[in-house]
Length: 235
Image (cartoon, rainbow, N blue to C red; front, side, top):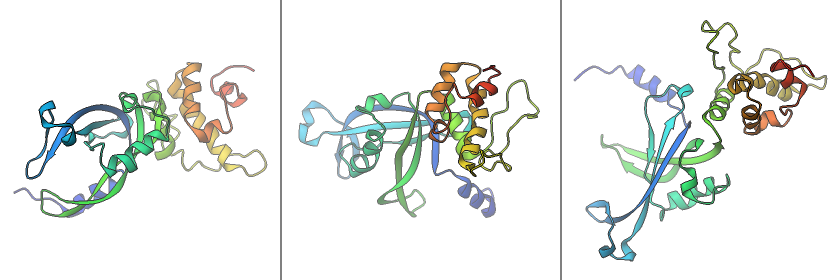
């Protein structure tokens, strides 16, 4: 058995994110739950009273997150996990049907369901599941939101050395304010640089990115002087 450094294991566990950004793939199928057997495919001959609905959800993290694994859940739609956590969070974001989630870029928190289970190692662990907090129209919008939350900014292809990397945008260095101490607006203005780079000069894309970031659209639109200046447009 190879040696595992407990300090490395603790570091990796501590760095595991409790929220994920990525593309959600969704499928659904009918199953039956048999005591002592578990989950099996349901057929018409099994009877409607044994029918349950499994929702297979797979989140593929965005490239910016630099994660090499998928995040997967297979909740039963007739369970409290689905009815009290997952579906209400999606419904609150405007979804009318689960199929509309397929292919969407999302942000999810991993929250406790209140249930426990025994892991493969024999330990008792708390079950966690998806709680959806944001839906995005594109990967670019999800990536921009990721950088806004986690700090840092993407390095453009023409700046491989990172000469114009904004650095941690969550802690801007003494930004100028508009005279009333509005640091929130100054922070939002710094995020504009990230969004403009993500949009690549496409006004429609930029408009969508701004619309998906409440902190920014609280103060700015694509016609704001600050935005036009970043895009190199003379007012």
